[in-house]
Amino acid sequence: MDEGTIAVLVMPLVVFSIFVAPIWLILHYRSKKQVNQGLSVEEHAALQDLAEKAEKMSERIETLEAILDSEAPEWRNRA
View 1 (cartoon, rainbow, N blue to C red):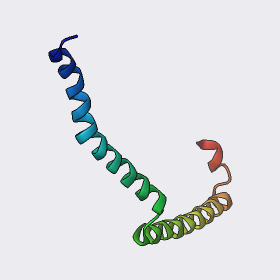
View 2 (view 1 turned 60 degrees about the vertical axis):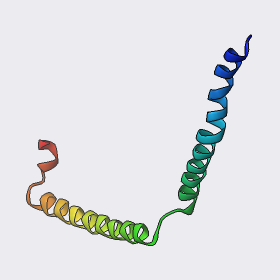
View 3 (view 1 turned 30 degrees about the vertical axis):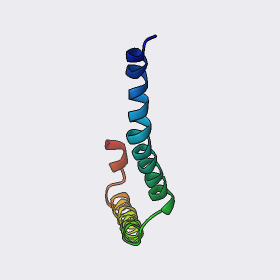
């Protein structure tokens, strides 16, 4: 191999190790840190709100089913 061929092979490795690898590592560990932090305060509040709404909706569905069972007993067989 002559010096030109070696330079062609070594230059991409040098560019990768100087520029690409550090940026890649920084972005990788930044994303890991964000995943490990868990929910933010706003996300936790939104989750609590959704859980409360789901519970209310479940209660409403049970009430509606009870009303339908008493007024139209065969409504479940129609669907």
